[in-house]
Image (tube, rainbow, N blue to C red; front, side):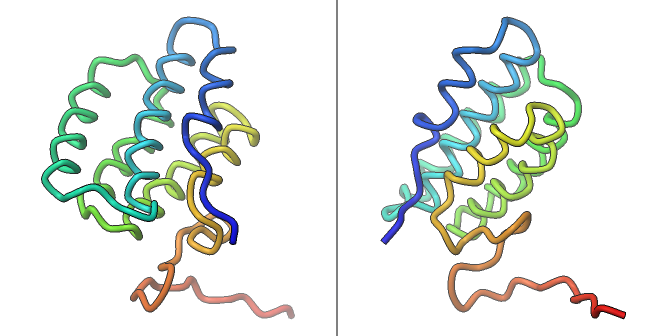
Length: 144
């Protein structure tokens, strides 16, 4: 069975190659957020109290970084989703980051962010509940 890959394995090479400045700060913020979201979708999510402390620390850290505006908006949405502290919330946070990451850093980093989630949790560009959730599907378009 395929599993999620570590945010460290996927995002640290891009972070190491980035020049100093907003691009590097943005990748650092993305790496921190992906680690927190990846822990939620992992096999053993952290206790709620630990998650709340990590989320508060992440929020404080993100405020001090110079992050490109599209990514900053995506990170704010991800923090809001991560407040729920469920595996679905972690997957949703990662999926919400896909578009701003693609716009800011390109498809390679976007794929790295989506690869943090286990297969089957994130389909395409949106997150779906892994099993039995109440997520909504967008209406499908019929070919005319």
